[in-house]
Length: 114
Image (cartoon, rainbow, N blue to C red):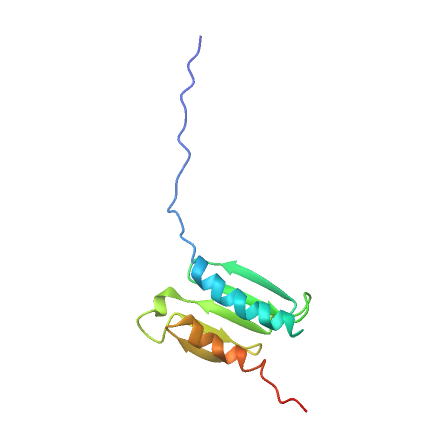
């Protein structure tokens, strides 16, 4: 009878991912829902990377994102960890509070009625 010794599985450093928590997703999805109801947006995607979390907003599925809502925890003590980035890569708003950062998107919903 032969005895087999088990070889431990090599463990590397566990990489942590940055993600939106439930409260943050609730705030983002409430703005997203209003814009979908207005017919402005149609699709979204969420990316959880090692240094940031990204909520991408699309007008149509096959396009580049119109806006990206990004969470950078490393910028928490500096400019603020939340930012809204436009299609061209320009940062439209940055801050510590997600609700105030997302106000830049709600302004797009307000239009003059003729």
